[in-house]
Amino acid sequence: MQTNPRQWLVWCLTNGVPGIVAAIALLFWPPFAVEGFAWNVPVRMSAIFLGASFVYRIGVFVSIMR
Image 1: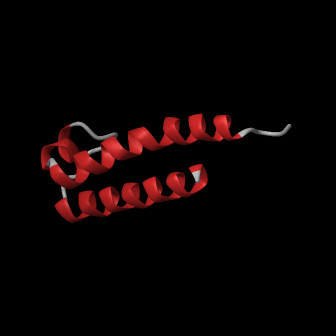
Image 2: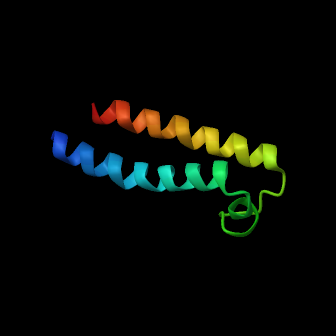
């Protein structure tokens, strides 16, 4: 089955938008990592690592969209 660019765009936005929200929350709002994330991340450096990973994920989806 062939895919068209519109399908890729929808797929990237479906996966990329939650990544943007999680990256901003993990990097700039420390209580989110302890209370609101999928699991507790009490160590700040671990939350920064996860936030940076989500930033990388955003780059991957942007490159796929392009």
